[in-house]
Image (cartoon, rainbow, N blue to C red):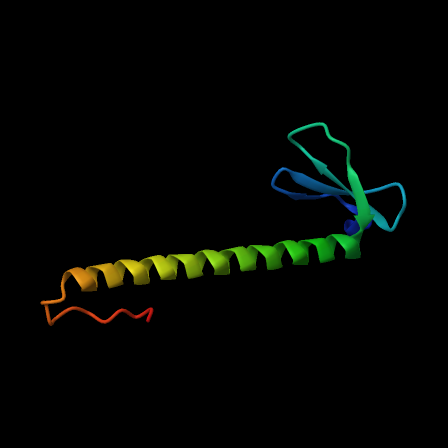
Length: 93
């Protein structure tokens, strides 16, 4: 019975396949013929963790920018409606 841990793994256009060395894996893409990268499985896992952290940081910064934009717009609306006493409070201040 073949070892299922040595079977290729596909993620979208990317594919991880066993390399010639038993402890290394090769990353290839199905879209273009490019030079394949090889690393151990642990190195690929650490790389994926860094990608996820960078994605979370990017999303956090984007959310902060969106919150600032909403707060600024609410402040602009409040300034234009100074005579209106029923205006909602700006939740971002």
